[in-house]
Length: 444
Image (cartoon, rainbow, N blue to C red; front, side):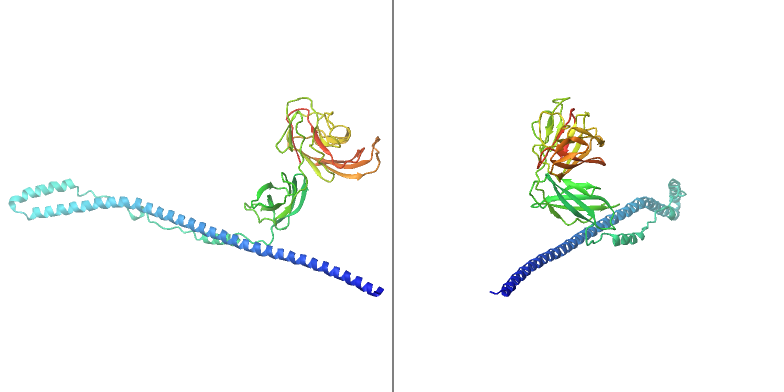
């Protein structure tokens, strides 16, 4: 085969490969379009069903309320009518009895006048006596028309206008949720979820984050509040979880539509404290340690169960209970888990004391962070700066061949410094030490 033919063959193979890649990319885009169309049609169908169900429930509820109000008003009319007519009926009976008595008296009087001379005197005397007993000058009082009820219905014509105005503004259809999940970041035993507002006209008052396992159909609340990120803990590694978020508008009581669910997972096992350390009690998940009073006034360092902290991660200590402070107290990270020390204020370790002092390889820094109290969160972030021999200008006697850039944050402040180690480490231990009981710390 000539060189020209080989060149044409090579160009043909390259064109075929490019066509295959092009077709693959187009097929992926077709799949994306199919998913987009499915989302539009599916959400439209769900929205129709939700609107129809909601307005049907409103119609039923409004009809029931109107019927109940009508029945209450009709009952009120019946009660007023009954209470008003009853004394009139009694008065009518009294008058009718008087009319009957007067009729009878008239008949007797007329009969007495027409009777014979022999009986006239006796009958006239009896009639006169009976007439005096009846008290013909005593008449029952009949109420005037202005004194008896005259019922009427007071109808509020503004209700329909007000109802029409509210109905015209009731509910709405949104093409996009006002908030969306922005980022999912794996953390040891959990996933950090960040979200953001995507509707400029929407003013959020609170956010609500939910999650579920990939094989479950039931979401559960993870967070409700004003923050735009939350660390969901206690997730099994390598298991897909779905996350969604919504918001409640300012001055509103109802929640907005949910964001599009995002799938996330963590490959990192959760941080755990080392069990069996005298002076400390651990939670069932071993991520919470509490300093007890079994060895008050002294005790060693409680380390992690393994060197589970890696550079590039954020390690967080959350203080949920506090005891008496001591200058030897410490929270931090170290290259080893030596047991013959009572504090992390030593070589091959960086830590913060409960008074806010920061120690690097046992030496206190000039910069200081806020004192640690109940509710404090202390974070450690590290990144590799150098793997070659280095020297620290501030401490000429120190040397090492591994340098880490460390950021310790507490409250609204943070300190940044370089930490020199005498050997390269892939992972680090974390630890804590408290002299007095009552301290309780969660690590994640």
